[in-house]
Length: 151
Image (cartoon, rainbow, N blue to C red):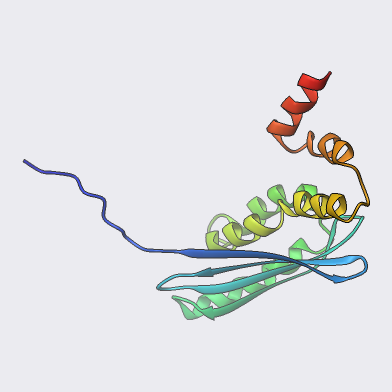
């Protein structure tokens, strides 16, 4: 009788970093490395406006020479509010005119930036934990439930 066993098809490694690169500028970067790909993405985000000021893609390794043609699409993210990135990424990078790998990478680093930024503000003493919880209830079920329980 056939016995099903888990077979590793491919290992993919993702890395996400957030750095403050200026007084009002942060960088959200992500990287994918696997057998076929080594891709790096970057979003420079102006705070407190939470606006993408610059975006870029670098292909270190790609399966097809044509893959590089999608890099220009990152420019479409410039001027986007962080809260609107999910929708913008969906429209820009999914489908036959996009790249699902870039959708994944920008999606890992961009939409979650608000959480990282606001947590850093708590850590720096610029805002309270209660203010953070109130702010995050718009974007997070756990914070929404926490606020509901306190009410």
